[in-house]
Length: 161
Image (cartoon, rainbow, N blue to C red; front, side, top):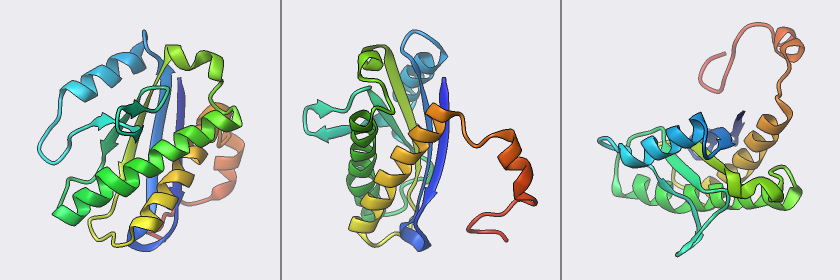
């Protein structure tokens, strides 16, 4: 099981992505199927597609971390962010981060934060593309290391310094 995280961009169009990649027949596969089958108010996981009728491989479940707050927020989540995740997965396949020979036995869950205040579809797409590819690299390489974490010091993030 590969677990990855990435935060890309700034302001309301930034992307925060968490990834879990693992076997279809293991706990990630069970979580993938359960996630797809159990939507909740404001959260409707769905399969990521490169184009209509063309789901990315490995099958990727998009889980929105922010409840859909408006029509525009929904458009940016299901449109620009979803397309960014699709392109990020394809970038990882092209780069060999996800070994092509194993794609048929894998599933991917991507939890995606799209700020309800987001307003730039191009930036939302680009940031989610980069964040998805980076999160997959982090999962594949099991980074950050414990030593790198110990060097950081106190916790900080774009919302807290």
